[in-house]
Image (cartoon, rainbow, N blue to C red; front, side):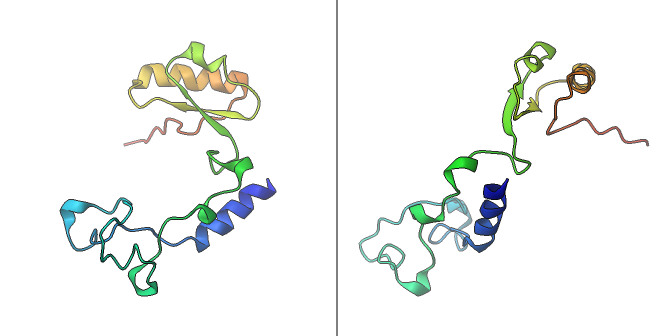
Length: 125
């Protein structure tokens, strides 16, 4: 659990990596792309141009890819898939699963004492 706290601390310090020109031109989007222009200030690592993606910004290897709760996510589509989940794993019910089937899966997960990352929330209207 110590590495999860370290990852959270590192993510707070990590800069937001924006594509060069992404904030100006909507068609480019904000997703990261490596700068390749010959005169690009970002490629030349000029301080005023912004931060560039490098290997030192990554998470500790022991917690890479884990959910913030510390569990490894397993995508489940039906009740049978819940039986395959092991210690240290949590279920994420697929988005295309309907309400009726999702309720069955939630009951089965309670019986097996499994953590569900996206439980069904029933609101009273």
